[in-house]
Figure 1 (cartoon, rainbow, N blue to C red):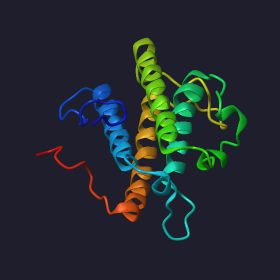
Figure 2 (cartoon, rainbow, N blue to C red; figure 1 turned 180 degrees about the vertical axis):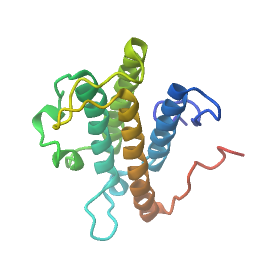
Figure 3 (cartoon, one colour; figure 1 turned 45 degrees about the vertical axis):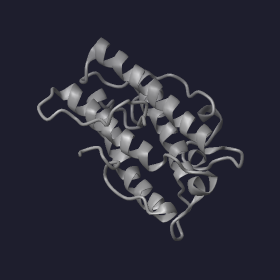
Length: 183
């Protein structure tokens, strides 16, 4: 099984350099998220917990949007691409259309992850972690690529927790890593 486009379970290096450690940590969060949303049918993608309207399908949509926003729009100041160019970024990325299948949602997210990996590799090769992103914050500051990677790790860590609860409510799947990873 592959996780987030990877053919093995990612672990950040225990003594790697800064780039390898940051990218390894982000890939581990992506892989954990991919595991939590894998193998579900439409009912599983739309399951909710309590009063929350959050779903695993909504998380896939949201994180696909965040991947594109952080690493294309913020990092390179590219204009938003479809479907993000036609939605309210604060609300619409959490909703999934009635005809969105689990495979299409996972494919949209995986494509966004693949684009992000390529853009981050390009940025690291051309300017390193200390370079500022091209799209400034509203207060005029421009965070570094390093800070943006930390923010993305935080984004995934928060939503992996949500995905864990949602997935457990669907079929009882729990855990930090898929079975057999560390055997």
